[in-house]
Image (tube, rainbow, N blue to C red):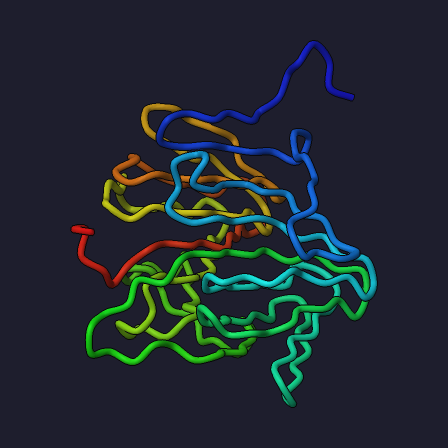
Length: 244
């Protein structure tokens, strides 16, 4: 029970930490048998929208005119496009290009992290196609040579994609080698474990189930605590010039 209005959740001009005790569920247009916990959106100052979708069996997402990334947290989702059908277990993911019709239906009670963003096209470059993957099949790479931090890049590293989705796993006691300050913004879902996050000039405990938004140029640093690894799913915009 939460007493006297206490919570770890905070929302500032350039960062936010949102904890499960403050999550509010809402239906989004076209959703059926599902609800959304909208973590960040342009209303917060973000250039993208990210939410957790919670599905009943046979629940489904509504249509989306923007590009969409879906990462299964629990249960099983079925991604259908014309005659093709893909079943995604936990750790499975799908990238759906902007303007492409694709249904997302739960085969059982499920949860998924969803990112939606208007696509920024590059003149002369082809637009991305539907992509289906599984994190378990993505090779891990050490972050900047640090074997204690493993990065798995879920989307291809080519300029047709205007954002990246990665998972980062920290061995107990591992931390970023520097405080990062950069133009890219982040949406972060803590998947496992926890630790300490520095955002701007504040320090926060972060644990599985939390969501963090980091705006452009927000000073940021993370260190893992505890006896088990810490892991998060990370969005970042990239491959585009800062000028509109």
